[in-house]
Amino acid sequence: MKVLVINAGSSSLKYQLIEMDGEEVIAKGLCERIGIDGRFNHSAKGAKIEEDISFPTHTEAFERVISALTKGDNAVIADVSEIAAVGHRVVQGAEVFSKTTLVTPDVIQKIDDLKELAPVHNHPHALALWAAEKVFPKTTPQAVVFDTAFHATIPEKAYIYGFPYEAYEKYAVRKYGFHGTSHRFVSQALAKHLNKDISDLKIVSCHLGNGSSITAIDGGKSVDTSMGFTPLDGVLMGTRSGAADPSAVLFLQEKLGLNPKEMSDYLNKKSGLLGIGGHADNRDISAAAEKGDKKAALTKEILRYGIKKYIGSYAAVMGGLDAVIFTGGIGENDKSVRADVINGLEFLGLSVDPDRNNTRGELAEISAEGSKVKVFVVPTNEELLIARDTLELTQK
Image (cartoon, rainbow, N blue to C red; front, side):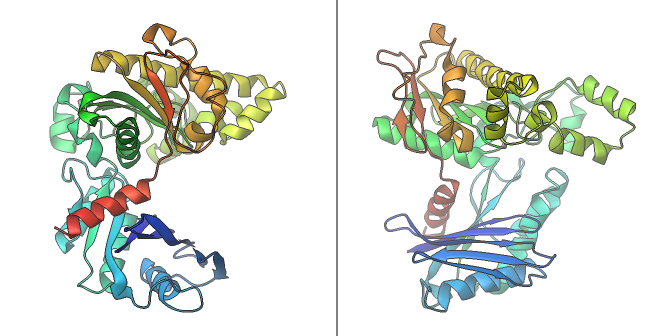
C-alpha cells in the first residue's frame, strides 16, 4: 500500500510517496515558489525532473505532483487511485487536536482558525488541504498529523506561563511545543533498538538543526519541552534567539523603535547563531571559530551550554535518565556538538566514547563503555511516522 506524505508551506509543497510494505520512498519532490512563479523538482527510479512551471496556487502544485507520479518514463503508479491515503503535516493543533485526525471540511476550518497561533504555518496548511480535497478522489482518505500532538501529555504545571490565568483562558497562551513528530519517532525507534518497552524508559531527545528543541520523554510521553507558545523559545537556533527575558525584548523594541511584526522578525530571523556569530548555519559557525573568530567561538559555547542545561533539568524533572538521543541535522552529523554537550555530565552517568562518536546519520550508540546513561544518535524520519499514522488511522 502506498501513502503520499505532504508537508506544505505558504509557497512550497514537499512530498514523498512511500510504499508501506517495505517502508520505501519510491518518489519524492518539491514544488517551490507557489504563487510567485514556480519551480518543480521530482525524483523517482533514479532519475530527476527539474523544471520551471507556473504554480498560481497549491492546486496546480498537487496536479503536477500527480502527473509526475502517474505519467512518463519515471511514473511509479498507473493511476492516483493506487495511493491508499494522503498524510499531511500540520504544525499547530493547539488543544483542539491531540492526535492524528481524518480530514474533513470542519477539520480544515479549525486548522485555519488556529492561524493566529502559527501565522507562518497553519493558513498555508489549510490552503494545501483545501487544494488536496479538490485534486484527490473523494475515495482517497486523508489525515493530518500535528507537530504539537505529542506534547499534549505535558502537565499543566509545565505548560502554564506566569501570566494572569485569563491569558490562557481567553487567548490560549501556553506552552505547546513542536518537533513532536520527530521526538516521537526517535524515542520509539530507540526503544525498538534496545528491545525495551518504551513505558520503562526515561529519555531526553535533542532535535538539533536550524530549529532545535529538547524534550523530556517519560514512559513514551512528553512531559516537558524547550519550545513554547511558538518555536522561538528554548535553545539558540539558526536565526532564532531562543529563551530570553521578556523585559529585554520590550526594552529592545523600544530602543530600536520596532513595531510587533518587526520585533518578531528581529527575534525569529535576525538572532540566534546569525545574530551573535554572523552565520545561520552551524557548519559555518564552526569553520569561523576554527579560524579564530571570537564571536563564532562564543556562539558555539552558548549553543552547547543551552543544550546541556536542558538535559540536566529534564533528568531532574523525570527523576532519572536512561538515555539521551541526538537527532536532526546537527544532532545526527556534528560529533563535536554531541561530545561538548555530554562533557561535564559525568555526574549524571553520561559519557561519550570518541571512537563511537565518529558517526554520521545512522542509529548508533556513542556512549562510553560502562556509561550508566546511554547516549545515541538516532536519525529522524518524520515523513515515515506521518505515513504510519495515516495508514493506521485510514485502515481502521
